[in-house]
Length: 293
Image (cartoon, rainbow, N blue to C red; front, side, top):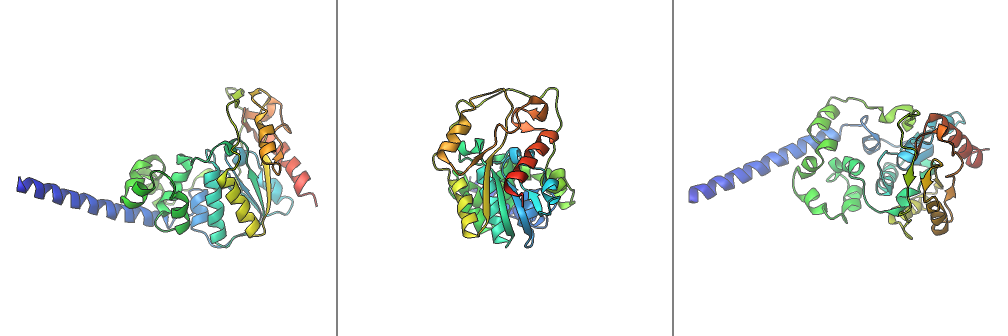
């Protein structure tokens, strides 16, 4: 019995030791990366200057054409992240400020995600390699239910989120394989898909009266003298529950409602995402209304 317990103890110590070593190796690899995605592009960067930084979900990533801002002489990058929530947008902006970015304007897409304060695991997990390296990331995750396991159990976060930051992604990161995330200054154009879902139902969505991550973004911009432009972006005509946008406007009157600026199905790839043609029409309107100087 004593030999068995000793064997179990040695095995446990060995497993913990391996986990610690692997955690160190994976983290070291991510700390050298700046070309895989928008998070490492910011985290491992030096100070940058932007006239316009775009934040939000895929409805920012696919809707704001960075080059059209650039054509106006506005240094711009679209940091919208498909699948992301305001949890991630708030954290990414915090990291930019920590890295002494000089930002004149933040254009924030805030509409559907005002209805929740959840993190989006597919995106938020990409911050986790830096969990022990960054106090800002640590504090941002500190209220999450699984924070203790993510923070204190070595290598656990890499196992839990293996598709996002596990072995395969770590190898590609080590090999410095590029992705399309940073092309077109962050803007991702969509095509018109014949099988795109051109119906949507948002009847059950309601904006929170006080979304803490949205309020966090507002506070950061005010503190750092950044002009914050918050907009709701278009959806196709076949949406049930479009009064959601009226609810947002009532709860947050400072948000500009552009949900009906582009409506025809020909300008959409799916009901919630415009194709490149629609995005260009929408971006032209934003430039006209806010940057027409």
